[in-house]
Length: 96
Image (tube, rainbow, N blue to C red; front, side):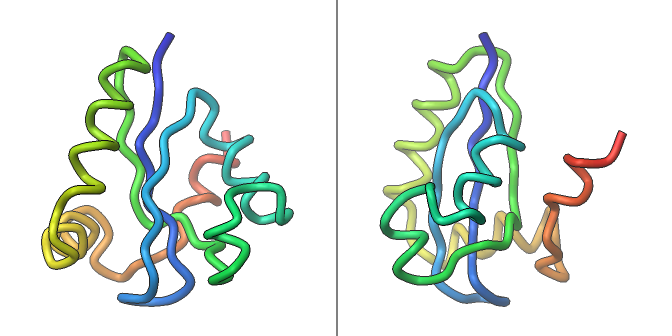
């Protein structure tokens, strides 16, 4: 089973949350509906700014752990390489 590592935020260069899931669209909807992590609820994190697909969920979990240990500047650099405008990527997941 595959998995995703993803980063949520509340604004450009705002608070960052790194998570892992097998079903990215469903997990993002949980965050947006207030049923996601308490951290996301506390800081109003509703914008998906980065997502990385992995063929194996265990690889995704390992990557999430590694990314959580990174310096903030490295996380921002990763986001800006893939999504320089910090657009919400959820619409791309929801469309066919």
